Image (tube, rainbow, N blue to C red; front, top):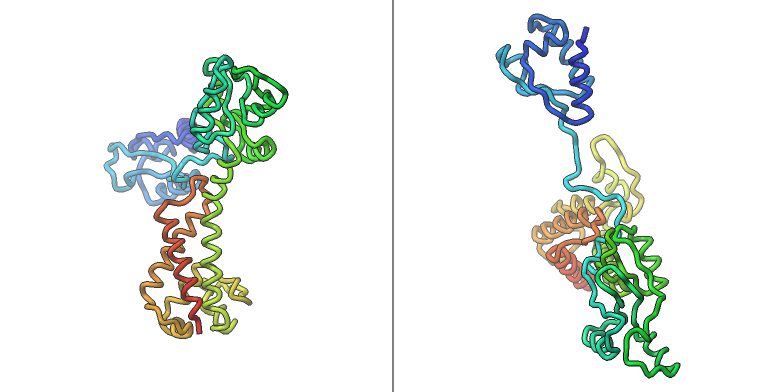
Length: 326
């Protein structure tokens, strides 16, 4: 019979991942066993396995009163903390406090700031937490058209401004920005921390989408190189995984890993009738495969500059190779 003390320890380990130090003698006493016999060991092991526990070092080879650690078996975890929902805070522009003007500022000050920095709008604020609106080229134009002779910002303020919380889901923010052309971003303490415009969204889209476009271009070129060079039954044989067969009818059914495995074989390479050197090409193609794996993680920060350069280099290289394909 298992002691209640062990049951409580196991429950705490499961809930908190806490580790407990015990001795082999104490461990066996939890089961009302006085000695470490083979039969007793079987019962202890069964209990440990059922509860996904392990003992380090081995309780059978440790001295009977030596301290050993009872803990949960290692859990597979992500290498980095995962935020399931991408939020507007991941954008650089949402983390760059914008230039601002006050209501009592001179109109020419606002216009100078906008012209010098190529801004289309400036938030009009009091302190760091009160937003009165924005001044834009459009609001200035309307004011002057309607005969305003004022030289103060307060007479050209537009109240048509949307302020989003720093934690707003990015997809929701994008919809708003597409409608409003820009939004201001505030942290939970109401301090203004950024302004996000259509240009920022376009730049972010390019950061995320460009690698996919380059990768598709590379894959299309590789499919073109392989097109018509192999029989369907050959491809099915080449791409078997153990005893598991795959239904491959077209070159498009192949994965990027399949491309590498097929092309790297000298007898397959010969069928492509290319004049380039095989080993260097395979080496760089495998590098593209690794980059592809990173791309498929959909990291909002995109891939590294070096990885993008490799994609561009391979895409351009294949474009030239295809020109001279037999």
